[in-house]
Amino acid sequence: MNRRAFVTGLGAVLVAPRAIGAEQIGKMPKVGFLGNAPFSQTFEQGLRALGYVDGNNIAIEYMSWELDEQLPLRAAELVRHKVDVLVAGTTYGALAAKNATTTIPIVMVNVTDPVATGLVASLARPGGNVTGLSRVTLDLIGKNLELLTQAVPGVVRLAVLANPTHPLHGTLLKSATHAAESLRLELKPVEAGAPKELDAVFAVIARARVNALLVLADGMFFDQRKRIADLALSNRLPSMFANSEHAEAGGLMSYAPSSVEPYRRAAYYVDRILKGAKPGDLPVEQPTKFELVINVKTAKALGLTIPPSLLLRADQVIE
Image 1: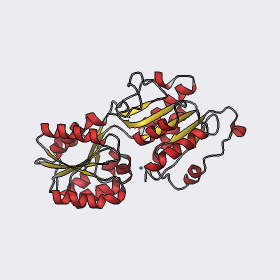
Image 2: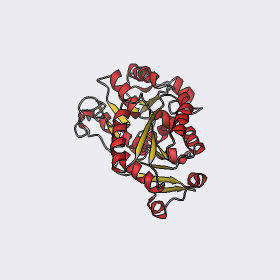
Image 3: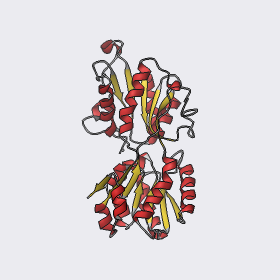
Image 4: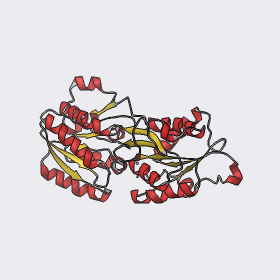
């Protein structure tokens, strides 16, 4: 999710946000959406369930971007539009939003460890102007590695794909290293900070003679999920991902919370804030449900037979 370039047809809206000036909407609350295009519909569905209809009793301004470097400019633009609430998806987006304003309430979505990144003081009492929904990526890495070794017996050496520009990938790599030690795995960290670097990175992975691949959660990797899945397959690498969409795009496996449903839940935070709640008093929510997705088609292409016990545990099996 490119995640930051919204779908054709919506692009005109994003390049020039909907004409919803004060002279047209009066006191209609205005929400700025700095998020991934595929999730905007889910967010609006959540709002409708609470009685809000865009253009009727609420106005939503969507903002797109193509590169993470553009996020501060897009966030600042929404602030200049004087939105009442700013919804920001991903860690990058939430950080850009917080840097753009200390007064407008921000609802973050799908953020990795908001305490470690300084977005909130604590999950129970965020303080400041940011609250919303986080992902427990740090705790999931050990489970991801465990499931991968169950699906691919005999894994000894594992590549871990990280993005050096991600604010927490250094911490995630440390967590992966600790988990690997308990599983007696050797890790080969590799980095890609832009799509153009992926081919060279997979050439490095091929020379490293690894048995499998773990891809850390990252917006750019999400955007490039089909390409990464194809590169893993062409290099005969069983792959584990932190978003189910990766497995749906051809990766072998994923074990993660939903990327979509938090945007529906974000509407609840918007509603509470518009009704007078302070974001700093609204606890940050963490996911409670995690889904195991296995792509059997990819397994067959790799010559793998997934153990029946693991298939029975899967929430989704892609044939």
